[in-house]
Image 1: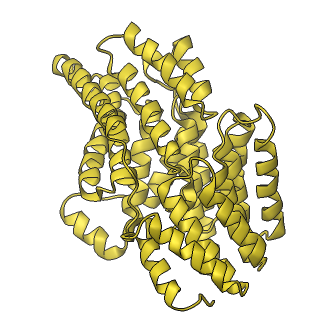
Image 2 (image 1 turned 90 degrees about the vertical axis):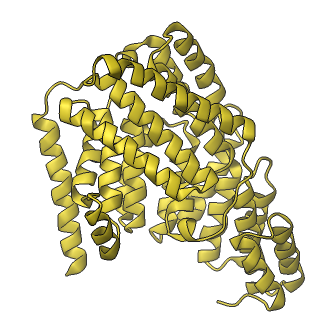
Length: 402
């Protein structure tokens, strides 16, 4: 009964989002959205070709000095470029609460951090200058909120400074909520506002009560409706809204709905490696077994074709393949896939440790204790004072058993 009721709520939410779309007025967006160079830059962005995207957006910013939107666009490209470099854009990392509770340090590049923070500060200063003249300048408000949300994302995902990131996220939401108050058809603002609503609404009751005393409230239903409206109509943030929707559906085990969202993103951006990876991830989580294994193997095969993906982090596909194979109890093949993920060129620090521990577990389950020990030792060598390092030390004492 609970499952059917939850399904009904989701259906109503989606229907309500459709009603909002059908009766909504003309969508408004940053004037720079229509700039041909901006559009070209985002064609590169959505196939993960960040260097080409950054080069174009630097030209856009030079051509529009003092425009916070131009700076925020460049900031977005720089943030996502760094998150992708560190393998932090695979939603598998965020699909459970272990991301919030464990020790997962990543090697921060000080130069890239300083560049990102400098751009975020510049966007806020430029927006403030315009808002001092006109407090209802929705373009400046939107750019300031978007810049703060990007800074918050970097701080949470790379630095894991959750308290500081949350404070900035609240400021970002305040700006985007003000945008929608002034102009309800500034649909791109619903990405930050809708995410905020959903996340606060999804908190356990005790946290909701505590936050409520501080005036912080949210609604999963309202948040998902806002995200779906952005996904349907957002001029600049539609793909981002779809990605967030798929993540939230995945966390709630609504795999078929999430797959539908991701397939629509793939249809629009078929050369985006992460969208292709996410469909395979969802098929694995949906329990499709060897069909998921085949999806990962096809992804690896496609990535080997010259020019098929402008940018592919194969370690993410290998890790997913290992997860799918282990789920089918093909332990030797799973261990090999995990090890391929760990030692792939450019594999991020956290993914490497997770892969090595997972490989050791698979080796133990396959009766290959000496190979398991090597994997655990390698995991410790790549980050002793981490959650995965702690797990590896325990498993050196006794073999892993299910």
